[in-house]
Structure formats: C-alpha cells, structure tokens
Length: 379
Image (cartoon, rainbow, N blue to C red; front, side, top):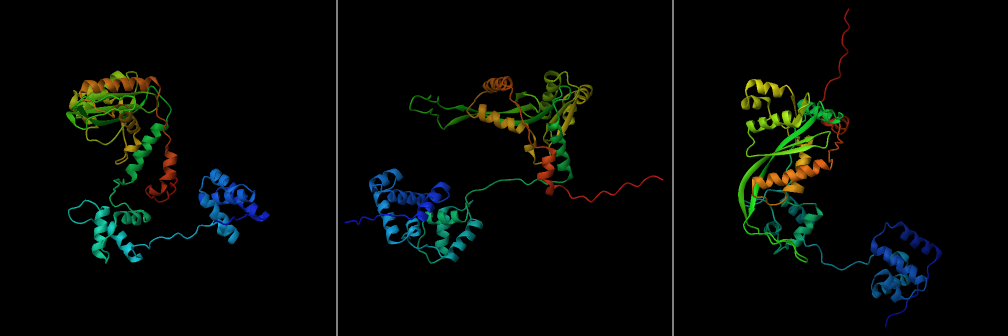
C-alpha cells in the first residue's frame, strides 16, 4: 500500500519553482516536476495533477516521495537510469572513427554501417556489433561516411574579382531602356514520355505514375532575363551550337530590344559564347552590325551564382518542367504559358549582393596588393 506524501513548500522553494516555470529554460521533465510540486503544495489531488500535467500517477507519487524523503533538488533531478555499459571502449571508438574516415575496402565505393561493423569486429575482440550501435557512435562524432558533398573552390585572383565586380556594378545600375542588362544561359532538357497512361488523382488516392518511361530525345533551352525589368524569355532549340547562340543574339537585338542602343549581356565562359560565333553564323557585315549593339560581360569561372538567370532557370524547372513531357511541341507550349504568366505578373529579380558587400565579406580572399606610392610631381 502506497504511503501518502504531503508536500509543504517554503516561501523560498515556492519562489524558486515559480521562477523556473516563468523562465522556461529547463528540461521539460524538470518543469513538469515543478508543476507537480506546486500543485501538490496547493492541495490538488494526485489524479487531477496527473491529468493537468499530462503524466502518470506514478510520476506524481515518485516526485512527492523524493521531495518529502529528500529535498527540492532531489525531487527535480533525474534518477540514475539502469542501462548496459557501452560496448566499445574509448580506444575502440577512436578506431571506429578512424576507419570511417579512411578509404573503404576494395570493390566498395563507400563505407556502410554493415561494413564498418564487420571491420571493427575483425580488428577487435568483439564477436559481433549491431549496425545501430555503429550508427549511434558515428552520430556522436557527426560522421556520415556514406554521404558526399561535391563542391568547387574557385581561384579568386585579379581576373575573378574584376569580372565579379563588373557584373555586380551592372546589377546595381538603375533601369535603362536604351542600355538593358540581360542575363543569358542555357540548359538541356530531356524529353520523357509515359509507357502507360498515369492514373489521375481521386479523393483518398494520389496520382499514380508508372516508374517506366520512354526517352524521346533532348532539347536545349536558351533562357534570358532582364536584370532590372520583369521580363524573361525562353527559346527551345535542338542544339546549342555557335550558330544557335548567334541566332539567339540576333533575335535579342532585332526582336526583343529593337530600340536599345546597347544590350549588356551577362553570361558564362562557354566556348560558343564569343563574338566569333556571330562571324561563324552570319556574313561579316551582319555580324559587325549585331556586335555593335551587343556588349558581353562574363562571370568569373566557377561563379555561375553571379548570373541572375540561374535563379530563373531553377524557378522554371520547379514550376514548369518538374514532370514528364515527351515532345518538343508540348514543351514549347508549356514553357510559353509559364513565360506569359510570369511576365504578366510582373515578377522580377531583387539582387542584394553588391560590390561593397563583396569587398566586406570576401575581403580576405581578394588579391593582396602593396600600398600605392604617391605619383611624382612634374617639375
């Protein structure tokens, strides 16, 4: 038969518990024990306390007992919990970490939990180790050897900085219809058809699509976006050769911005993105005429994030192309509808990264230069 324990808090203990609850910076279990003690001190029955605090009646009983038999600190603290000893010793855990950071065995691309468990069994006296135990030890050391992160470190030299600040200065300008800034890039798209008709969605049933599909070829997208105005354009081509690039530039000059004196085009360093491509596609007079109204600005190598159109391509793929489209005609129709809706909505880019911010955030990576010496005055 359980003993009935009566909780009588002093003024200091009551103030401590109330301050703890108002602060909210304790563990949830500790706060619940504080609520139990305050309610018990106020004479609330155990069943009512258990319901209001959302704990079992045994928790209320143990908390009151630990306070009466001990003190407030004991009532609020965690009791030691029984459990098995860690299976791996300190040196063995260090061996696991070192193994996970080393190269995987021959014939395997990366370590798995099963491989690591087997390797530690081979290297130690253990007869077996569970994959869950290996996972917990790796998690404690923030290790996931089966994952990879691909990245590219650009070489930030004078050329990188010059191109970066050139592009950022263009973005910082105000809108100028006579000298627009157009960001240009291209992206391949695979045409994919269905093997079997999808089953449409219904109440209580999501749409079902067969995992098999048909490859129907690939096409290329030339994507352009105005850096200062709510305008974008997507052209679908079979290829992305120098001639296709030249045709796209001529359309930009004669159709999209016929009144502009100079069109500043921001693009990457692809081999076809050169003035020479226009001379390969058109007679010299025509190429010279077009280049007289075009001004190419190149992003630094490995710095595609500086091209505003990369954001637009991501939006295009997420909103329009994230599905199976099997024909070029269907792709052009869907992209045209997306383009019309986005232009009509007046959606435009808001670029926040400026030359001043680049010099502040990337100042350490800028090339180090010696202080300028004062120019000698003429006698």
